[in-house]
Length: 496
Image 1: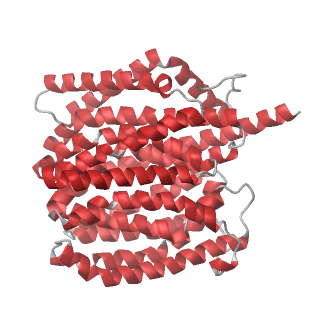
Image 2: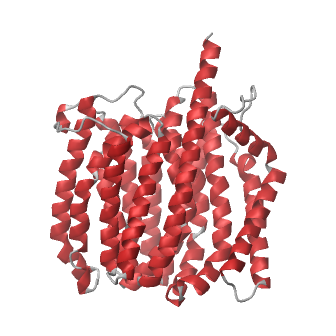
Image 3: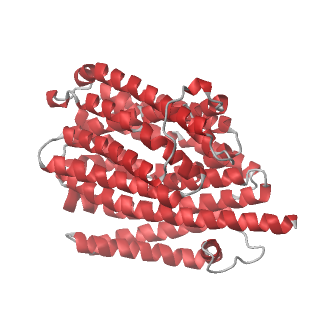
């Protein structure tokens, strides 16, 4: 009987994981389609200096997210029991207090930022607008935690899709109207407002005030989670905040564009983290199931990232020439230097979630210490010598720490990464070479020809995987079908 119960529980988790994973994939397709189309249009109307300002807004928004709940959201998602009313209200009240403090701080810092970052005078007031827009974010926070804790990721996906629609619609409309950097600011505020409205429509909760220090929270564990995130944000602040004091806004805009495009392949893995973290938390006390899901998460991340890196490597330069315009061509050398970072991050993100699910945030903290130290050391040594390319070199050097984490995970979870991932590397290399060969044959690229090249790269990649990785792909399809109840899983099937 215990075996049957465990099997039923595992099948239930597989079904929830499959549905949540498909919802996230659909969400990412819709979101990235909107982001791609809207981003291409925005880049036609915005200048690199505007992108430098957006980089500051984005990193400040991430800093707000760090301090808004002090890691309590992650601890609540791990709970197997329904959240108490006091916990929900305490989390909301904490975020309201933080939002008010951040809004006041950004209002006071606005004139200093314009003066010290070399921004044009019309940028004054943008940070103030975004700061007061943060007062809307707490209304999204509690429903988002509840939906993720329940693995209701299909509904959670609707929140982020609606936020993307709102941002693209408002920012693009404002850019066309000539608002410049203000178009981005109003787009961000529209994202906040839409997320709050949709989240509360999808998940009702007993909104009300409760002083957070009167509620039983796992403060120590939450702060431990945020310690790793703190180091991540210090690392990510290097470009928009620290280097903005050294380079002109245009150069920062080029580096921001290159880094953003180079990390686009990671968007889906970052989304799947919301699936894998609660799922791995459920099986953290079952070593074999945990190992199986860690392998699956690493393979899923790398499957998508290798494919998208191949597409970007082949299509980035033709797209800039034919679609985005010559103003972004100086950013291409930075982009090609930064693209390998996505390949290195793909397995690492999955491993971080595995250690977090085990209640070992110190691993993430140590990893981020390594990343931050290597980035700052590399930047300090390389930027004075080779300028902006020094930031690129430093960004690659951080993955010495990533290799150390993979070596530790190989021992802890009994994973042979070379055996699990070599077919992806071979298929991705073949697809990239085929794409470059085809672009040489098709001179004067236009959108139809670029689409043809993209299809060819994807076809070669899929064919290579089918030849080299057929068993893993078939098991993935069977697990997906079993998750939706269309076909029972094969007894004893596993991955890795």
